[in-house]
Image 1 (cartoon, rainbow, N blue to C red):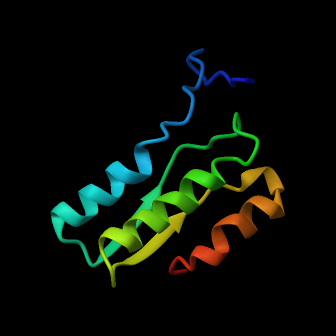
Image 2 (cartoon, rainbow, N blue to C red):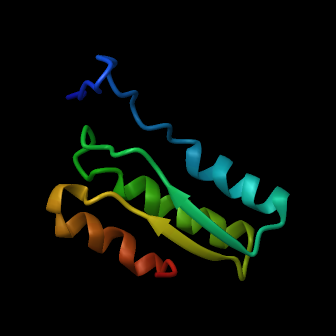
Image 3 (cartoon, rainbow, N blue to C red):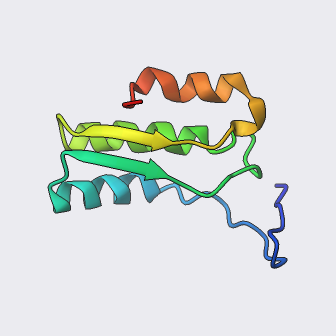
Length: 93
């Protein structure tokens, strides 16, 4: 796995596969009707983190029906396939 080093020289950690579930649980626990999801850039991931965004949207919608979800996504390094991965999950724009 390729890891990028940040300005302070620390390698990025691998994606946390449980994060979408934890985010959705937090949204439910707080009783949010509108959630904004963002992240650090994940240029170390082949999809730029698109799969984690998509799963997070899906988990929020599953656990909190009717909650609007806005995502502040990275540029996915210009990878249109990564953007298309998130789009069908119908986040708010």
